[in-house]
Length: 209
Image (spheres, rainbow, N blue to C red):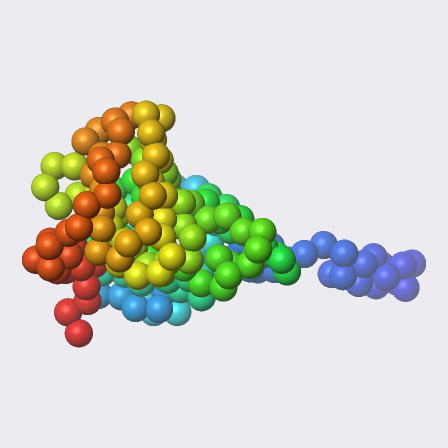
């Protein structure tokens, strides 16, 4: 009987993943830089974030007043969030020949540089917002509100598309941007942003040091 009990205990330890093992399978990014306060929320439980903290699928990451946060994903993709932002990772699957990533910006401004996933032939990466979906094609871009409209600007790389139910535009020239006046509105035709406007956009997510 004692031998049977030992066997059953060993079977449970081998066959059933621990809570830590299950949790690790959902880790998609780590905090690489932080300024002031940020938290991750899941299942109504907040976790204060610091450099090295894990970010899991389904986390709602929020930044405080004057805060900045940088996340580095498992494929090298980086996301920088400005103050009072809310951001979540809905899906992030990296495979040998491709992958799929779906992220969501609920509030605030962000910039993003795609990593190795978007260098693969069969890969898709999008950021959803309340007003538009941004499709990434190996690039660095910014998204947020500077005046009244939600806007997107291409900062480097191949390009992005910005899509709503009313239409779609391609940003394939560095320094160009588009604006969406509201949910369901058509994105404006791409147009060059002035250096001053690009600087203002960058300042919303820039760290102080």
